[in-house]
Amino acid sequence: MTHPTARTMKDILDLPLDDDQAALWFLGQAGYVIRAGDLSVAIDPYLTDSVGRVNPPFARALPVPLAPERLKVDVFIVTHDHLDHLDPDTIAAYAHKATTLFVAPRLAARKLASLGIGADRIRRVDAGETADLDGLAVTGVYAVPTGPDVVDTTGYLLTFANGRTVYHSSDTAASDLLAKAAPKTPEVMLVCINGKYGNLSVEQAVRLTAAVRPRVAVPNHYDLMALNSENPDTFVHFMHQAEPSVRVEVLEIMRPFVWSAGA
Image: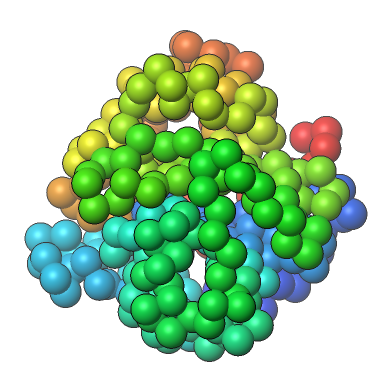
């Protein structure tokens, strides 16, 4: 079933879902909103042009899909402290700091605190740890930092109360340990493919995804900055050759991808 593109947060929260379903909305770069039942999660939402303001050659090539003051989620996850993942302007405008739980690895958690998030709203989850948050299990997954400023970079595996699972690789370089530490056979895998500034190349992303063997692979980190881009169709092509059992979805921004236990 094809669902219309969401234009507001209300569209996201009001999308009808069966008890065994979950849905995710791509926000661009590595950002998503994910929902199962009444529980909503944002991960790495980059909803301003913070990077472009600091470094104009990396200005947004696409408009902001959802104003940060309109975002409203139960859990807000940050994988590491780079502006396009932990965006101070998005945090500043976010209107639900008092009721949302924020999840981050150790240094990013400190950054959230410095941006005015209360200590009682922050849950530090590093690689190898799991936190249970209102029916959502959040497990930190090893990632290879792409720079000395983000040595705490962490991927995350989300397990919703209805059994739906999502693995976000975060920005990561390649290593044998990465593939060994990654969760095996999550339903949906969100993987970076841009191959620049230390991130997985398409070839490396294909190898990692083939090792993980998710039901569905969703490439990201290829679309938002002209100097940091990649063609996702290349990932589709080589993924099909490497592991044809993995279905690849190249998502349109803000159009929901819905899945269930069986499909």
